[in-house]
Image (cartoon, rainbow, N blue to C red; front, top):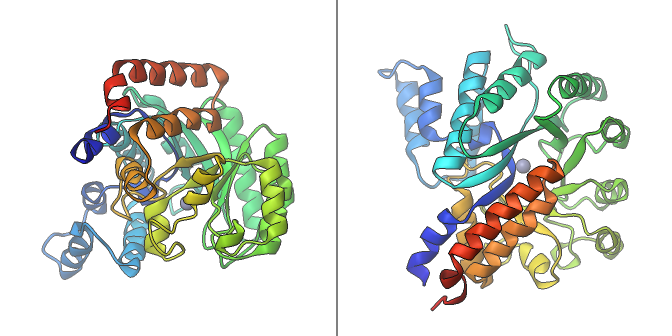
Length: 347
Ligand SMILES: [Zn+2]
């Protein structure tokens, strides 16, 4: 069966709910977008980092910087979004994608221009993949800057209500903090919320986030008591049972999880708590959603039919309409019916 796991994990229609736009760019796309003189030493150095199929954390940070620099015009943002959507569909068989990105202003590009470019690429997508957008607030930003970003997000949400579905809090977990008023305002204006939570041990902030009760949590690495979380926060969590976006490779490379085996996903699997499998930054961490599913089989002993069930359950956690949920469930049921042999005869 193990030889077939690869094909199975590709073929299974999958839902990706935690993917940052810049971090998801492939090395080929980054090389194209960088428009650098190929004869320079700097190009060679960048190309060397991009060509690696496994990267150290320092190299990963370098790729984040390369991606940031490469997406500083409206045209580049549009092309980058197009490329990530194609990649998720063609190389990963993702059928529903929620991309996330922080609205960004650069010389000649306002935050509105940035968001419009992403939305345009999403709307022009004609592949068999449904794409929605989550806009992020960077936790390093001041309250004033974050409020400005929120106002842009709300304005763009009014303009593109069927594309922009949610808001996220992301960025360096060692800086800034969760601002409940900001997220309450977003929620009052009809946005769903996903918050990067417990990426480091920070019981006070985790309690504030859990009390607010976002629709989904990103990572939740240090939430379970056996992973350093407080029992009182775990008790709150177990009452609310908020779906967690698990990104195994990202956590292992960043060193917040000791290994694939000792990843906190095992507690969610063991106690049948809600979770989904995601990539976070597949371009930077050299992964794919297919590979993340394989990791769960390899290190957490799941069977193909469990993977199908994970993908099916994930439909309930998406930020889109009930009509889209029904469509996705039908697609997954049809797939199940035509793959019953593989799902039940795994030896
Ligand atoms: Zn993330």
